[in-house]
Image (cartoon, rainbow, N blue to C red; front, side, top):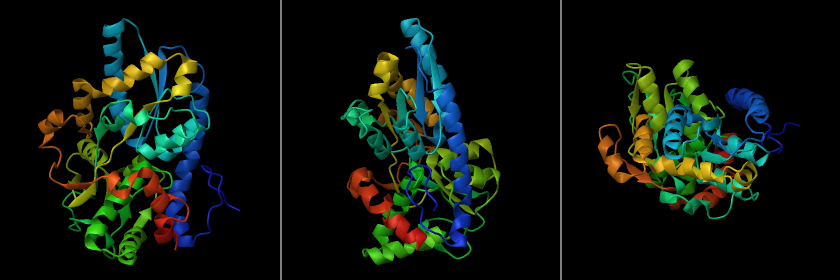
Length: 355
C-alpha cells in the first residue's frame, strides 16, 4: 500500500503514464523531507529573542534573501540590536505541514490563506490573523501567467492553446503546492467564462492536465524543470517566477499574460504559540510589518511581485499588465470552499487528473 508522506493517506493506484508524470514530484517531496529534517536540527530549535525563522514557499527565496538584509539594517538603526533571520522554503502545503509537525517557525509567509488556516486549526496561530496586517495580511500579490521559449514557437496566447495536441505543459501539483492551486483556479476562471456547464469545464481541465508531462511538488521545481532542464513548451507560473526567469536568462524566454487570470494573494502571519516560547513576539511582528514599508514594497516589485500599495504599484505599469481581467478567491467562496470542491480528496482535481 502506498501512502502520501505529507498526509499519511493511501494513494490511489495510477496508470504507468500518470505515475511517470508524478515521479519527479515524488523525488522532490523525498528531498524536501530530507531538507526538512536538516532544518529541524539546525533552524527550528530553541533560540534567543533576536533570531526568528521564516517558513516560506518556493518562489520567495530571492526576495527574502534581500529583504532580510534590509530588515536587519532597519532594525539595527531603529533599535540598536543585531538580529538574524533563518529561512526555510518549499512547496507551500508541505511547509505548512512542517510547522504543524513541529518546525519552530516564528512567522509564516505562504502562498495562500488556506495553508495558514491549516496551521491556525491546530491552535498554533490565533484566530483573526488575517486582520493583523493591512490588505488581508497580503503585503504583495501576483497573478498566473505563461512562460514560453524565445520566439514563442507554438504561438501560445491564451488558455485554449494549452489543450492543443502536442503542447507539453509544465505545472506543479496542487496536492503539495499553493502556487499550483492558484494555477488551477486561474485556468478555471477562464473556463467558467467560456462554458457554463460543469461537464464542459471539467473536460477542458482534463485536456489541459493530460498535456502536463511533469507535475513537480512545488512552483520552483516546475521552473527548474522548464528553465534549467529544458522540458516542456510552456510553464504555468507565478508572474514573479516568469519575470525572474527572464531576468536570469535574458533573451531566452518570454512571458505571456492570458486574457483571464486570478489575483494571487500570498499570506503572512505570526505563529503565536511559537513566538511566546521563543520570546520573539516583538521581532516577529516588526518583521511582517516592515513588509508594508515603501522600501519593502519596491523590493517586492524588483523580484516580480505586485506591491499591495496601489500608489507604488502604479509606478510599475511598464512591468506588470495592470489591465488583465483578474478573478479573486472570493469568486470561489473563499479558500475553505475552494479547497473542499477542487483540491480535497475526491475533488475536481482528482476527478480530472486521476481518471
